Length: 401
Image (cartoon, rainbow, N blue to C red; front, side, top):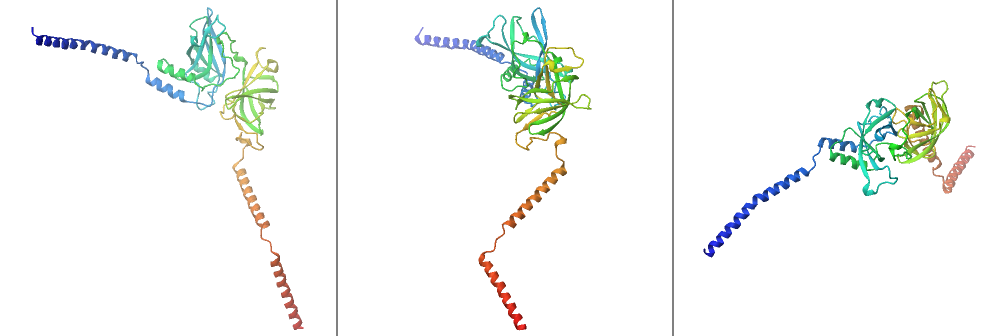
C-alpha cells in the first residue's frame, strides 16, 4: 500500500471518529441544559406581586401588642399559642388586621443556658392566622401552630411583625417576607419593656387585667394640659386619682405623662381624665399609651380579687382624637382639639376686621406724628407777614379816622 493510500485512510478515520463523537457531545449539552432549567425555582407570580404590594404599605395606625396566651401543650411539647392585639379595626379607615401574621423565631436548646453560636443559630419564619370573629371584640387574636419541631427547644421571637392576606407557600415569596422581617419597619406597637425571650416558658396573658379608657371628647385647657372625657370598658367601683402613663414620642422615644381622673357627676359611668405632658408632644396615644395600676388602687365591679395589676390603655373610635402635636409656646396650640374649643367663622371674621382697623389706626398715628415741622426761618417769615398785615390795618384805621 502506497504512502498516499495510508494517508487517505488515516484522514477518513479521523473524520469518522470526530463525526461519531458529535452526538455524544450534543447529548451532554442537552442534559446540562435540562439540569439548568430544572434548577431555576418556579414561583407564583400573582402571589409574589400581591405580597410585594402589601409589604410596601406603611400605615400610621399600628395595633398594640398585648401579649401571648392560650398556650397549647401536650406531653410536655409546645404545640401552639395565640397572639393578642388591642383592637383598632372599628376606628380606622384602613384595617391593619389581615388574614395572616408573620414573624421570625430564634431557636436554642433547652439544656443550654446560652444562645447558640452565630453560625449555629436557627431562624424560622412563622405565620399565624386571624380569628375573624375577634374583629368585633376588644382583643384581636391570631392563632399560631407548630412553632417547635423539637420539644427540647426554647424559642425567642424577633420583635418585628407584618400582616398579609396570603398564606405564603412559595419559596421565593417567603424569602421576600423574611427579608422584610429583617428590616426596620414594624407593623405593630409594643412596650419597650415587652419580653420576647423564651416565649413558651412565659406566664400567659390575663385578658381580664386589660382595661380601656374609651375617649370621645377632648379639650385643650392650657399649653400641654388636656381634659379627656370618656368611660371605661368595664364598670369600676373606685380608682386612684393619679396615674402615670407611658407613650411613644413620634413612635420612637418612650416618655411618661402625669394624669388625674375624676368621675363626672350626674353622668352615668363617665369620667374626666386630665393629661399633663412634661414637654412638647408629637404622638398618637391611640397607638400606644398605657398606665399600670396596682390592684389595691382600683376596684372592678363583678370581678374576683386578683393579684395581677390592671393595664389601662387609652382608646378611641375617632382615629385622630388622640393625636397630639404641640410645642410649649405661650398661647400656641398645635391643632384644633374639639368643636367646643374652636372658633366660629363669625368670630374669625371679627378678629380679622379688628386687626384691619388696628392697622389703619397705627398708619394714621404714624402719619400724624411724622408730619414735617415748620422751620424757624419759615416761622419768622410768617410772623413778619402777620406783622405787616397788622401795620397795614393800623394805617388804614388811622387814615379812616
